[in-house]
Length: 396
Image (cartoon, rainbow, N blue to C red):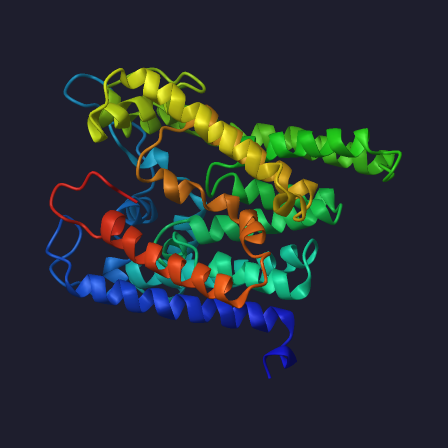
């Protein structure tokens, strides 16, 4: 019976079933949610799904971005809307105008619609590199992944995953010029332009290096190179827009740094320093270890070694060079600019091609175990990061 459904219908049914399960978890947790800064006690689904950064997107949809940056008492730029990009709140705003829906349900509708569309594109992408059965279980892994609840709340992740998966699919099909409009939207949905530019540079290099085995026609080389340059420019686009509106060249980076100041104070953005500082902070304050910077450096080296080993493993090789190059590029991007905290787990979602690695063993026991552990991890993430419990230091 199941095999009679076309592959895209299977992907939609898998994603829908996963979302029903996650909805049940969210409703149970919401029923026990105390009153907080965003909602009253025991909020309904839509209200519970639009807390945390969802409120920032709400502010943007209603009021736009500030032309004057807010300052803290000590004169530093404080948290503000410039940390969040405009495409998602703009689309939700359009739906609100067209339907009369308030923010919360409109945001959930947009996120879910993008999530279902993304599931189809992800399935098509996996079918390029894996057998049909393995590709579909990779969609299962993607749909029930520990952070998958974020695809049905008022966050931009599901929209960005739709655009990212589409761009990766187009690159793998060598339709480079079509990648450009997708990137133009994706780069103003979630930070991604610089990581994708690096991926395209590596992609062009690999195709040139292997041109004897697989031809790399001049027109494709030109197209891929142009799109790589454009992606790099788009990666700086939001920074330049923030500068134009506020008059401060560092408006965007100062805003992003405001979120890490609660951990390490106000420091300039130094590429690749954030993970050393962050893991050192967690070693000292979370685990009480002496010599925190040494522990931070050890943690970074361990993560780098684990990432390299994963990408060179036999299961990873089966998902193809392009998807591995994307994973490597995005990991390097995170390493360069981000600071590890509880929201970092959500930032790992663009690494979704790794679901194709997890999906490869065919053991029924293994596959059921993956699903069960993923659902348990969803519950853990919702309780730890999404549920609000007084002063919460684990934002999603």
